[in-house]
Amino acid sequence: MTEHTTEALPELPTARSCPYLPADGYEPSRWNGGAVTRVRLPGGRRAWAVTGYAEGRALLADRRLTADRAHPGSPLQIPGTGGPRARPMLLGAEGLEHQRQRRVLIPAFTVKRITALRPRLEHLVNERLDALLAAGPPADLVSGFALPVPSLTICEFLGVPYEDHAFFEQQARLRHDPERGPQAIAELGDYLDELVRAKQSAPGTGLIDELLANQVQHGTIDRDEVVGLALVLLIAGHATTSSMISLGTLALLQHPEQLAAVRSGEVALPAVVEELLRYVSSEGALPRVALEDVEIGGHLIGAGDGVLIVTSVANRDEALLAHPWELDVHRPAGQHLTFSHGIHQCLGQNLARAELEIAFHALFTRIPSLSLAASTGDLTTSRGSGLNTLPVTW
Image (cartoon, rainbow, N blue to C red):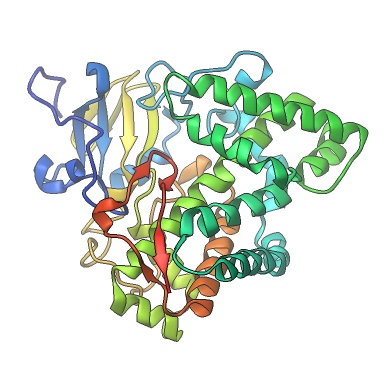
């Protein structure tokens, strides 16, 4: 067991040399292979970085840690916006409150429900590819495909007008900005508040309408909670999947022998998606705060300490699989922490998997000669949004 010391600590975050790999500072050799390491955050704050798969999985399921990013000890804080939307929703809620919120959403994300949605997803994906092909090469795959597909999907799923997508995509990007983030979230919440009010008067189709009709009317949740839940789902529903489409495409284009197996149908798309989910690093770390002392990996994490479960590195744990730092679409689908674990495991993972399978299949089937039109060194990323652009040609 180790105590907190004044010795020099690794500093996070660090820059990436590759858009889809973990940041260079997360290389295990830099931390002497330690699965639990004390690190320094911007501003001098300290936290624990957990890079071991077993340790990360255990902590994600440990009720002595909270996922509430408004907690003062959180290593990745999201300031509150005030008003009813400051109430913890899904990721920030715990205990019975979290169970209640999650329970009302589970029916919308079942395998059966998502399977029934697949034909519509295929239609949306092919519509975007029609437009991309009609415009001709070169093209930006982010603005032309990777971003619109998840946006179209989550808008239709929730019942949000797609014509407003530019507004909420911009606000969602700004949510990580320490200065503009709170205002962006507040404006997005105001937009959804007005939409929910309109739907109460003139119902439409989508999850928001279902919640108003089946939950609010029966007193299971209130109208403000519908706004809060919609806010969480709208942000999560397009940013993460968009990142995976753009970064996964880049990773495959840079591994031509792997891509050849995907294009030929040699490997099944579900297995390819699972390997990309394990291998590609987008956000890369899940924040937690210890509510009481927790001993893990020979270290004592004290009550109030911030914890970062670095899933991008935990997914590369050599104790989990052989050659973990290599992309291998042939390997059997294994375990990974990309969708988290425990009570906060991603509710929309079935939808995300379906979107990724359909998007990659259509993209590489309909554009078999797809290739990069820029060097990797010229590509830039933004936190939580994957690649800013991905120039391609065919």
